[in-house]
Each structure stands twice: as C-alpha cells, then as structure tokens.
Picture 1 (cartoon, rainbow, N blue to C red):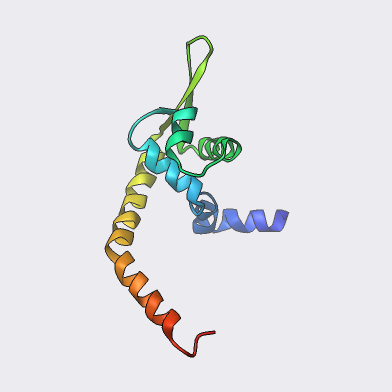
Picture 2 (picture 1 turned 135 degrees about the vertical axis):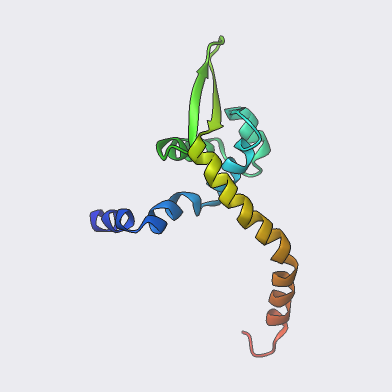
Length: 122
C-alpha cells in the first residue's frame, strides 16, 4: 500500500481524482457552492448519503483544503462548512463538467439504448 500512495503523490491527476472522483465529494462541493451550510442541512439535501459517509466526506475535503469547518458559538455548538478558495476553483472545474454532462446526456443515453439493442451484445 505504501508504494501505491507514493505513486498517487507522483501523479497529480491520480492524487486529486482520488478525492474528486467520488460522487459524495462532488455533490458536497456542489451544495457548498451555494454558501456555508451546517451538517444536518447538508445531509438533508444530499440525497442518499448516510450520516457516517457525510462525516467522512467532509473530513476528507477539509483535509485536502477544499472546505473549511467553523464551530458556531451556540448552545449546543453547531458546525458550519464552507468552500475555501481552492474549493471554489474546483467547483468552477466541476461546473464545466456538469455543463458538458447536461449537454451530452441525451446523446449518451440514445447511444446506450442503441448499443444495448444490438443483437451481438450479450
């Protein structure tokens, strides 16, 4: 495992895709692009994410410097998450990918249906 981790650090795209290649990270970044948000609010709007997976995702994004975590001075204390400048720049790149996906999804679905209907595809 140590050798793989070294390989990831030697290859910037592999290292970064380890984080942004998972759907929960992308969905969390997209949601936080709308503004700071508390944990439970994020959990309500990110469909299908468990409490544990959201906590893990937020921890990873914070570790990578993509989001910040702020404890609010309330009783009981509440935590708010927000995109950092680096997270905002990643959101811009994800936005381009999202635009591409929206534009090309109908064609991709049509191609899939055509492929799946071929008699030579098992």
